[in-house]
Amino acid sequence: MRPDAAAAPVFREPWEAHAFAIVLRLHERGLFSWAEWADTLAVQIKAAQQRGDADHGDTYYRHWLAALEAIVAAKGASSAAELERYRAAWNHAADRTPHGQAIVLQASDFGAPPHVQASHPRSH
Image (cartoon, rainbow, N blue to C red; front, side):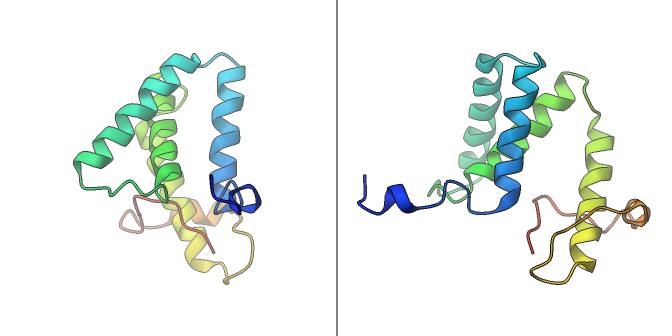
């Protein structure tokens, strides 16, 4: 371990901590077992590596989020369409939010055109 590793933040962005907490909470509520979660996350990481992810650690929580979306849809807690609707709304909210301010979803964010979508979380 590097001497400064203990001082390094665990999460690079607030959304990473949120995704982590959501997984823990859904597991605690019994939506999935920890073995199911580990398998789902492993599948996401392997798929990313096959697509060329260099696996330097900086994309880990993107895989975590993809696994979260996959397991939530697989368990029927949400649909892929609903997840996509929220992703589009999030991206719309991120586009209108000034840098450095918290991104807050509003009802108007859900009216964004379908082309206003991205495959990754946004941070401002």
